[in-house]
Length: 351
Image (tube, rainbow, N blue to C red; front, top):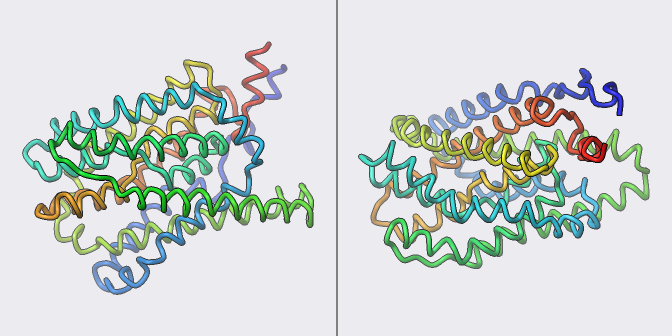
């Protein structure tokens, strides 16, 4: 293959206007949310029931890009599943515990909240990160299914092992997340994709529909970020030190883990799309489950609950930043700018 086929062009290597300014949108969304929480807290509370809808709108565009046959093929990729299972269930909880010991051992309630954030992998927004980073969507669905099943058994075990507290996982909460953030978006995406392809054709779908859906996805994500910060604006502004205390171990965790898994995936021969997908499914945390456990098992320790609520406020902008960096590093680490496709790297391997 000649070099011109894989050399980065301005169009390939660059991001769109929204993508290039992603850090700016993150900061603006956080600032607007904090202002709303400070001066108009009733706005955030009124919009809180819309968060599940916002998550659905974020995930739906990713599902329209999938061909269901690809999901069946991805189910046979045992290497990606093995990496995700190892990191999520034999490494991550202990890594966050270690970072908590280093940075939060003088704040035991925050340390406990940090552990709760570490014991269960994300099974909702991780599909959004995968899609924004141009990862392998079908593989992401398979990995999410694995995580949904395994965490129901492992979460109580890790909380008992690390914290010495016996808890039960609300299976209904996990099942609800799988239905709302996997089943329904997948069904809606498959139906609308089929209708658009039949009615308008492949060219219209790729050039007209997908750009609009991408804008909708990112807009929904930013609006959800505004609501999340508005809901906790008072806590953040009154106790800003909590953000800094939680931020240090979480920033280290997300960056060390994501880019560590990315390099491991690259080492075993994955292309960028598969590596990014595997890394996100090892890195994202199930903060909904962490908050639910904190509210029930640690109700007498309010700072534990506060720490689990602060977690996603740090995680969401961090993951968006990681999406931005991953796309920027694709050419340097993998030699491709393929918008998620693995064909170029596979051809190189065969050559």
